[in-house]
Image 1 (cartoon, rainbow, N blue to C red):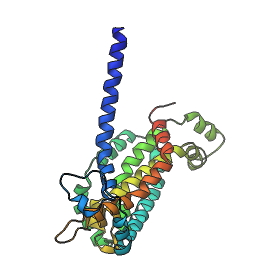
Image 2: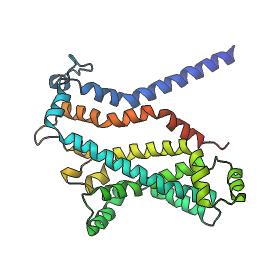
Image 3: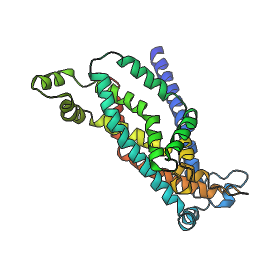
Image 4: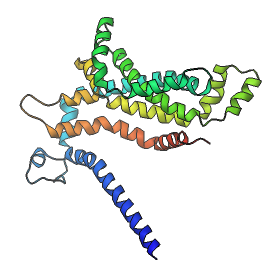
Length: 280
């Protein structure tokens, strides 16, 4: 009986921790969504009005009527995130395969070095990246932002893919080599089909990180035509006011594509990451 009571207390404590964690994590998102449906009077009211009364779509209509730039910002984010994801999967897939399946000296050192690079804050890379792209004449271009994001997130993608490739049995490659298959043939015909969940999971993670990235996009794409959604929305405030109603609606519209993408491919994300977490 005491053991059952202790087990019950442990479960109650665990669920309490989970409930607090979920509440703290999701409260800002819920508050943002509700704020986007509030009239301006409710946003600045005291005491705080949590629930919109009444619900209004005026903030979204204002964005659509007066802030057509938001569509361009979202389009820029989509172009940058898509190109970054494609480039990282192409380069990272080959690099992860080389580091996990081919035998040569220094593989561990390279993986540790990439992990160290991944820990660098983006702000520390900005001066050198800005100077380099300025000399190349690539500032305010998709090329600069995509290459910047690629360098920033490639190490993370390689680590995720490397952990996934380790779960694929070596016997499959050995049998293919006996049949005369080359390394690239093995990678294309065996490794890629078997690692599809991992590639999709890595691609979605990279896409979301690139979509949300702010410092590099702000500095490398400072012109209005090249601003991504996070940068464009951050510059919405006027000279003498901070329009929380418009910013909240714009933020919801900007994150909606990522939310839909994550919801649709959620099982790929979870399946890909858990498959790479343990070796079968």
